[in-house]
Structure formats: structure tokens, C-alpha cells
Length: 480
Image 1: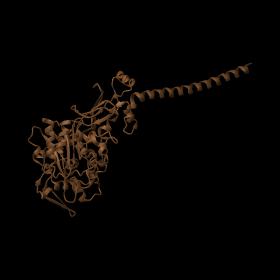
Image 2: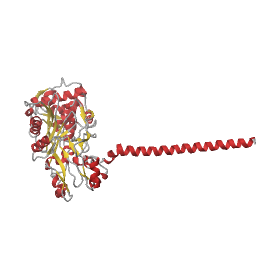
Image 3: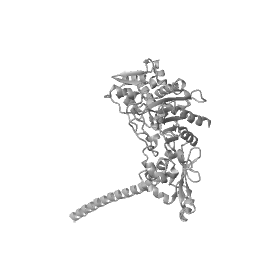
Image 4: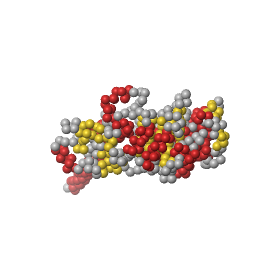
């Protein structure tokens, strides 16, 4: 009897142990089930829009079956892209400004580009009042997509477009304190209203490359605008600009390589400030030799050469000097020639950091998204990308650039109702000495308002072509 009780107790313990194991297993599967439900809820309420909004997600285009593509507006209320719907239900994408915003707004035919691509999800998403959506769905009608309000200023964009005229090149305008892109022009351009009709010609036109956004994808030698990089590197290595002295005789020869100032100009005895204001090639080649390839490379990469830019679509700028580079290449690179290539947008970002105390704000094009009733859906808040330099370094470069306008190569911008700091550039691109015309700069020096970067292909010196365009942009910003 006693033995039987012991057996019964043992059996009960084993059964209880097995039940406990089953309980643990049950709890485990219940936990997994609850976690899956929780993640599904979290994904649908929080992450789904981010996933769908990926440019790699082709599901977005299926939204057009039930949503009319929304409108794109400028910051000053102008319609830049809209969808007209006709009585038979046919839809047509309209671009009221035709060529003027062609690259930055882009197109919605034969793929997508520009803001039409970046804001595709928002344009094909409707946040109309839910009862309105239910009514439209019940009646088998499409809902109206949200409106994307861009950061673009129609007046500045139009001014930049006509100022560049029929010349090839690009213009970028930014608000340095926020990163808002106010204007972006690239030429040659195209009319997105007739893109489908002209598609074969445009994609095969190697002479003009009209579909290429030169502002973000163009690759140019920076010319003397690169001297802001050389100047920054010199200050970092020496700790001061004081004491520098150079006698410019119009040319400099090192290791059988001769480099000249523009048109062989003899600048005479110069300190650092006058060498920068006069854009003296000989002085900056001399500095480059003293600095060396490794030092220039380190500072260049601090300014995002060879690095990812905070943009959705861009071509990486390149800088190739290192400790093994020879003297002739160092001389050329220090003045913005050599193998260095950069986009106008990248130069605008460097200038923006200088204007903003060294801090680069993340550039952006979408300011706000609103529904068809004008109610806000989302709003972009300015975000600092990173510090490209210290505040002291930014102030010093700003002082150098102010001198360029006060008594240097950009003096055409002085004496106006606003102050300007800038740097001109003449970037040679062939054996005949032909050059692109550059200007980078910002206005209202003590509290910067507007940053511009301009290149005119084959335009000659910066003061010849790019500076007058900058003047028109600044005037439009303050007086129109």
C-alpha cells in the first residue's frame, strides 16, 4: 500500500512536470502570437508609409488607380504641377511653368524624376476627410491626392532661369539657416508637358544632355572657388593667416611646371587676404606646395569631397590628391584645377556651412504636405546635418569672401542695399584655356539670408558671367 502511494505521488509529480512544460510552451507560442499582432499593428500604423514611400517600391504607382495625383506648389503659392481630369475620366499632368522648373520638379512620364519622384508617395496618397473618401469609394470615384508644398520660390527660380539665358550651366539658391532649396535651375532644359512626344530625341541627345540635372549631377573643375578649401586647410595647419607674404610676378614655376595668374596678371606683394581677394593663382599654388597632398585631402573630405552628400539624387564630388602626389598636380589642385570635380549643389552646401557658422543644414525640397482641404498632413523641420568646420573657421572664410566683394574680383556686387560675401572662379576645361564661370556666395553677411552657387559653362571668368547672375538673384530676393 505504501509503495503504491509512493508510485502515485511519483506519477503525479511527473504529470505536473509535463503540464508545466506544456504551460511554458503554450505561453511561448502565445507570446509569439501577441508579438506578431503587435508588430502588424505597429507596422500598419507607424512603419507602413515609410516602407511604401521607398523609391524602390513599385506598389506606389498602383495608388493611381484610386487617387488623382496631387498638386505641387511653390512656397509662394504658385502651382508647379497639377493633374487635369476631363469629363471622360482622362487625366493629364500639367506643368504651368513649362521649362522653368523642368529639372527640379521633374516629370511623371517614362519614369519619374525630380520632385515628382521624391514626393511620389505623398502625391498618390489622399488624406481627405474619411467620409469624403468613403463616399468617393462607394461611387467608384477617385480621391484627390495630397498637395506637396515645396521650398522653391517661384520668383527666384524664374529670375535664375532667365538670368542664365540660353547658356549651359546651373544655378542653386539655398537658405543657409534651414537648408531650404529656394531655386535650382539647370540648362539646357526641356518642357515636361511634351516629354512623351520628345522622349526619343531627349534620351539620345548627347550634345546637350537636356535631361541631366547639372545642379546636382554635373561634374566640373571648381576653379578658384576651391580656394576656400585651400584657405581653410592653410589656417588649420598654420593656426593663423597672419604673416603670409608672397610676391606675385604673374607666374610660378616648380619642377618644370609653370602656372600663371589669369591673363598673366602681376599682383605684386600680397598678404593672405589680398591673395584671396585677387584670386592669385601663384600664391595659392605656393600654399598648396607647402601644405601637401595629404593635408589638402583631409580638409577636402571634411567638406564632403569623396563622401556621401545629404541629398536624394546627386553625383559624388571627387578629390584625388594624397601624399604621393607630385608637385605639379598639387599646384593645379590648390587652385581648383587638376583632377578635382564638383557639382554646383556641393559648392552651395559648402558655402551654406560657411554662412551658417560652420554647420551644414540638411537641404530639402518638401516644406509641407496638406490634404485637399488645406489641412496639414506633415511638416518638414530643419535638421543640422553636421559641422563642416568650426564657427571661427567659418567666420574667417566669410571675412575673406567679403573682401572679394569689397575690393576683389566680385566687386560688381558691392555698394548695394545689402552686403555680399563670395568667391569667383574660372575653371579651365580644355587645352585652349577655355573656362567655366563660377560664383559662390551669400547675402546679408552679418545674418545670412541667401546662398547661391552658379556655373556658366564656357562663360569665361567668374566676374564675366556668374557674378551678374548672382546680382540678379540677390536683387530679386530683396526687391521683388
